[in-house]
Amino acid sequence: MEQASAAGDPRFYSRAGPFDLAALLAATGTRAGQQPAGPARLFSGVAPLQRAGAAEVSFLDNRRYLPALRETRAGAVIVHPSLAGAVPAGSIALLSEAPYAAWAKACALFHPLPPASPGIHPSAVIDPTAQVDASAEIGPFVSIGAGARIGPRCRLGPGVAIGPGVEIGADCRLGAHVSVSHALIGARVVLHPGARIGQEGFGFAPTPAGFLSVPQLGRVLIEDDVDIGANTTIDRGSAQDTVIGTGSRLDNLVQIAHNVRVGRMCVIVAMVGISGSTTLDDFVMIGGQAGLTGHLHIGAHARIGAQAGVMADVPARAAVAGTPALPAREHWRMTAVLRRLARRAGITGQDAARTE
Image 1 (cartoon, rainbow, N blue to C red):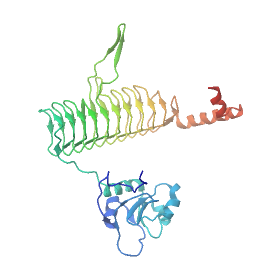
Image 2: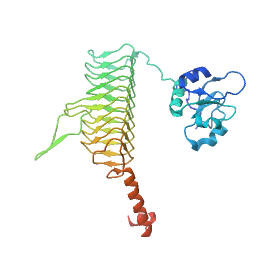
Image 3: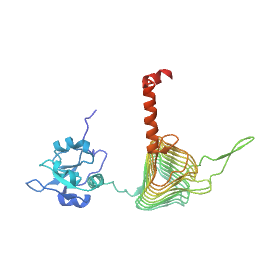
Image 4: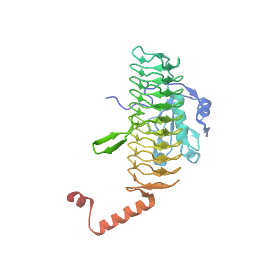
């Protein structure tokens, strides 16, 4: 097996550059600290502090890694102004109030997303009534149903299935084996491989003869600039619509049930499950493996801890944790009390394991 390489292996990532300092400052929105003497530098890529060389850009956003910063050989390092003095004499300090955001811009400068390569692969199956913009890239074994619309500069990867009537806006990227039905998708949306959008929601009525499936007659509406992770599933609405708001980020393996409404700029981490008809207001953050029951209202800027079990509404700007979810401080106080009681009773983790 090969040893670890620098960021941006050219087998997998496109590369641009080199760029001079002026271009780097303009792209990242940083300002340069004291510059080493010598000829003007050109920068060819990005790399971690530990591996960066004189032609590469690195960053620091966590004081835990100050020792690595002091020893780095990077040609330039993006740091907060308060850490400018820790940048080695041979490196240029690129000063930013938001180093991680500036790092993202630097990465995008050297490794831009490849543009769509217009054309339709011969193996694709496209209904005659579908509309595919001439600038779109349609990959192998793609299926596009009747009346569907694919916008300018979209990229549809291998095996993508687009159902009848689906509309996809400009500059969207759909990874391999994505399926989309009963959905209207805005611009610059990313659906990572295996995402399932618009399938029938989990709705049924108990009867004496058994379960009776309830027709799911809604849609999925995905607004602009949404990013949806691999193997995430978003059910269409039952009679209303399931909505994912502008700029939201959904991690891999998230389940969104029918009629859920996710607001703008929400973050939902891997393996979260949200039951039907729950509403998230704007800027909600949900930690991994949390579960939300149905028909809840989660207020704007609320924060839900990992593995929380949410069974009641959460007010705006509240932070909750635990199962059942409680205000985070209350949950951690209760946990601390239980630990103290266990120690007083002489119960250890090993004792608990032996009793199971």
